[in-house]
Structures are given as structure tokens and as C-alpha cells.
Image (cartoon, rainbow, N blue to C red; front, side, top):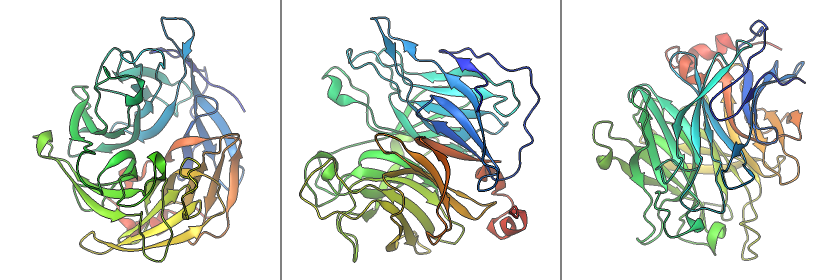
Length: 381
């Protein structure tokens, strides 16, 4: 394995090397263990691993370093990539160094990184996680879950934010409100675009009508519909309350979400422990298949596999017709791929916690082809 570049706050040093011999279906991931963007070439075959760019901790100014916490990664319209970094300083509730990083030439062998947007000071950007590029908006949407527990003077909202690429700014589209009766949106994590609609499905760790304390509350799923011209008119609609799913125990740690190849088919990840709360029973760790009808309403939820411990981020790889799932175990995670029915679980990369994935090329770039054409593009192994 090789590290290709080191980056501090805004600068990077590249290699004097040529671009990679990439193939459709190779996997990019945010490597939480190494603070790096890692490439898996030929997943399930050679599993060639390359660390494309590595980020240094940011000096805090008060002594010590502010640790990098890479989250999601998405491809922009010109082949650039955007990466969330939810770093924060625990000793000062007014200073947060969360950022969204732009990387040009990530797959060229000589990547160049710069800060697209920062949250230094009491800025509105704090702990950006699930992130998506929206071509109609001409910019990014992301889920924000700031560390409000650090102090009363920290006034950054939980919710959904966006920024156009032309004018970087953290614009609030939806603010969390837990003063209303449950179920409500609380502690959002990841989001996924709904095909054919200007809306996103957003997972929320909490907010269910049932459950115990903190992250032992039931998880929920929401439909976020942005108003591009007037963010204040954006809406959030409940799709499913997982505190009382049909024929299943309560889901209390729903995080990742990925669109499957079939109409109305999505996959989500869930972790069972609810911060160790003993008040279960809770549905097991696993990957679940979620089905919605043509109107976007909840139909069913079924466990696909419980073979991955503490699953978090996931993505559908249309070129291999497999799910890619990251484990977030406290000691050593792993990157897995599996068939859509949960069979054939393969370990691609051990001892790695990924908080975000992207497929080469990005699935969003394939939308013009339609799902019916993807079968023609899938790489045979």
C-alpha cells in the first residue's frame, strides 16, 4: 500500500506519476483509520489498494491537533470530488474546524486539495456527514449533526444544508425541531436522491414515537424536498418510523441508505445496541431492504443480512450489481461487498472504517443511461 499525498488545511503534494488504469466499478472510500481517500481497484478480484491522498490533523491554536474526521465523498460535475470533514475541538464551543474539501485530479496521480467551505469560528458548517451533488441546484446538499452538547453558545442548527458550487456558503434548508410531538426528525445521518423526483430520503438516528434515552430512541426515515429558490420553503415528510416496524423489533441506529436497481428499492444499515441501553429488544445489526410504492410510501422492510457488525455507510455498485458496506466497529472495521440478497459476503479491506463511498465513475453520471442500460455496463469477473 502507498500514500500518495499529504495535505494540511488547504495544500497538497502530488506524485510524479501517471493516472491509474481504472475500471468501471472501482471503489473510492473515506478511510477513517488513515485520514485518507482510498481506492479499491477490481473489488472482489485483485482488490488493489491505493491511498490517494492523506490529510494531516489541523493545529488547534490552543495546543494539540484537531483530528480529521472524514465523512462522505461525492463527485462534482467536472470530475472533481468533495469530501466532508467533521473535525471539531472539544475544548472550545465557539471554534469548529469542520470543512468541505474539494479535490481536483484525485485519480490523476497528482491530486490537489483545497477548502471549498469551512466552519472556523462560529460558522454555520459543523460536522457535515451525508452529502450529495444536485445538478438542479448546481451544488451540494449535506446532513449536519453538530456537537451542540459542547456549550450553550454554540448555535449551529442540526438539519439539512446546501451550497451552490459557484458561491460557497452554508445555507440552511431545514432545521431540526424536537419541540414537537414524536415522531420528528432528530440526528440525521445519510441521504439518497429519489430517482425521477427532486427529493431525497434522509435517515435519522432518532425521533421515533417509541424508545428510550438518546440513541436508544427509534430511528426514522424522511423525505426532504428542497426549494432551490427559497430554502425556507423546503419540506421534510415522514416516510417510516422504525421504532415500530412491521414484523421486526425496533431499529435504533439506522444510518446508511443506498438506492437499489429496482423501482422503489432501497437498502439501509442498522446497528442494534442503542448506546448500550438495555431496554430493547432491538433489531439486529444488519443490512435491510426497504421497499416504497410508486407514490413513495412505505411498503415493507426486511433483513437482508446480519453478517456485517455495526454497518454504517453503504452504496450500490451498478457495475458489479453488489452492495458495498462499511463496518464501524470500535476496534477495527472492514469494507465488504455482497449480493443484493445478502449472500456472497466478501471482505475487500480489513481494519478500515469508511464513512463514505463513491463508485468510479459516480452513479450520478450514469443517470442519463437509465437502470435498464446498466446491465450492459457491468463488468464480468
